[in-house]
Length: 396
Image (cartoon, rainbow, N blue to C red; front, side, top):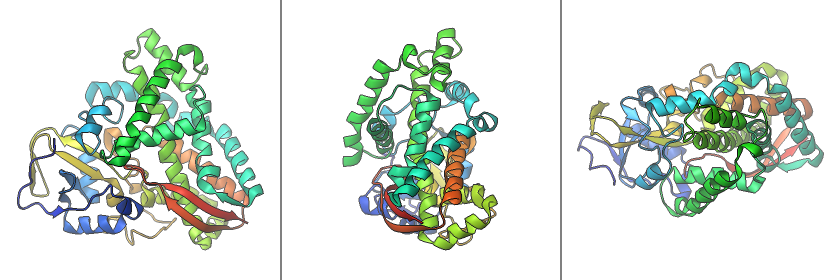
């Protein structure tokens, strides 16, 4: 059911944020929404939208007011069918899931994987250099997180195509049920059935993250009913979001060769360059929250159960927060303020691993490549993910 009509004082916009042409270039539409105000009624979706940085960040840090347990998709179907995981849960359930998943993903724990991640990054970059002209999505961005899922998460080998298909499908359903969202539903069911059939303790890699979850379920340290959610959450979010971050940084470095030259001259800029690419690219364009009890935001009364779109991608280009927000600036002092990983209790549990993966891959490129040249690109048409489907680059 769509939200009831908003008060007359609420700005409105009829843009369909899930239309192909908007997904290909959402930035001018976000700018128009920000100009209308921090809270805008989205006529096409029957949802409110938070458009500006301050209101999005504030809402994310008040999980008692803006709840996730009713789903984080932009329509009723998506919310109903993708509830109960770490992202779409509240309170004790969320804390139990996140608590079970977090130990191998702390900053200290993640550093113990550095050698293996550097090894995979070296293999990928060296093979790409040998080819000369590459699709940086297929040859670089996808390879690293897929290897991490295989080696660290410890799931059975589902096949590269299946893993990418299932992850993308989950994010399509987390938008709206347009043709793309509807087409993704069979893949979601396929993934659930496959995991239910194939992910057994005997098939999990000993010592892996999923093996640890399985043992916790066996010993009662986590409710066995929660274990499948934790296992799926190790897989799906670890792929598309990291692929997006790698792709966007390579895009900005290849689009303007002077940026790559600058990075080669000062490798200390790599961590900040990663954050700047995530700010501009914002791997997940938006999720939603539901209003727990009637509240007022920027003078607009939001009724109980109203669904609100948190436009992360718009917030990350808010001109009142980030100077010259559409420009890639690897020395930007406030790049790390971005909301590309969210904020508050739902801040991305795997962010430290994602950052390490991107840093290791870019560091190897800096070591082995003298110049990047952008040859062409296409954007992924996905309801939630902001990423490239194709990124043709020449490595010199």
